[in-house]
Amino acid sequence: MRSFFIIIQFFLLFMLGANLQAKVIVANQVIEGDFHDTITGPGILGLVFYDSDSKTLTLNNVSISGPEQTDTSDYYYFRAIYVENSDITIRLIGENTISSFSGIYLRNSKCSFVGNGTLTINVPHLYGIMLSHCDTLSFKGCSVVINSGDEGNLQWPGLYVYVSTATQPHPDDPDNNCQVFIDSAALTIHSPVCMRNVVGMHLRGSRIVTPEGAYFDSDRMTVVDPDGNVCSDLTILPSTLGVSDNSQKKWTAWGSPSGIQIENVEVGDHICIYTTAGQIIHAKRTDQSSLCLPVRCGVYIVNVGKHSVKVIVP
Image 1 (cartoon, helix red, strand yellow):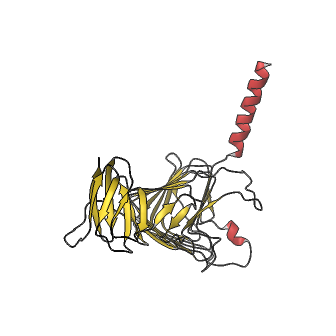
Image 2 (cartoon, one colour):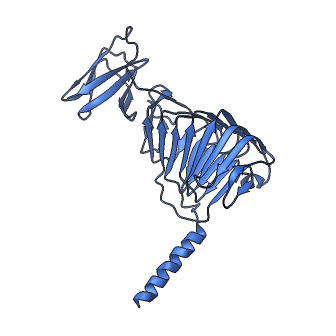
Image 3 (cartoon, one colour):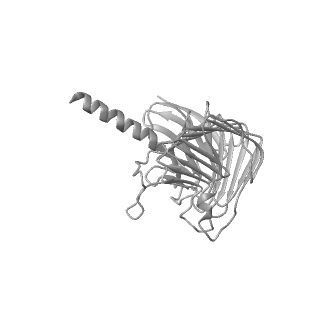
């Protein structure tokens, strides 16, 4: 009997592996097997190189183009970049552009954008980056710009995590655990909705600069401005989160056992409190000139307008 169960377990593992076949597609060019070469084909200009051992896709001054609009379902076929069942690193060198009806689709795959280059994704009708059953998306050291979505079409955010709904069940019925990490990188999104269904956004050496005072709302799973409106234009830039030139600063901040005390701010000022790792823990528009924000013991960066100071809370 025990041998029977062992055979069943091996059979299930085998079937699971068969159903999770890795797939990488660039501009409809399917990359299969042991591949260590450049990718060429219609819609690809510049150097695109894929290494299957390291699972790294390098874009070196690349332009990937496809249909900008269509009245048929052809856009489901065209994939600027499509990755399924394979963790992947996308290395950016120089200036790279995607201009097509749909952008980057990641399915059951972790993805890391790295390098010191840029990537601009222009998709006027659909999503910029779509994730399905993915738990990690990271940006490190690079710059990514997403221009996406019809004006007013809230269905297609710039960064979209697809999850099951009562009317549209996902075939894999995934649990959404998607975390986005932005590490000393720049991410700019111009879309009717900047992102949707993101479980967590973590800033490390980067900060939100537009809209001023915006922050990630874990309940709504997106970035909102200080008034609680979902952001359409979002700009995150690298920052050492150091102390700025405060010669013109009129307000003061210091740490106390009660939290962070702030005095002499102007009513309507945007106040952000960051950890030294770049995580926003408070973001609000003040309605008073003096306030105390409760935080745990530690070191924090207090930002009001264009000025920042480091505060130690005992």
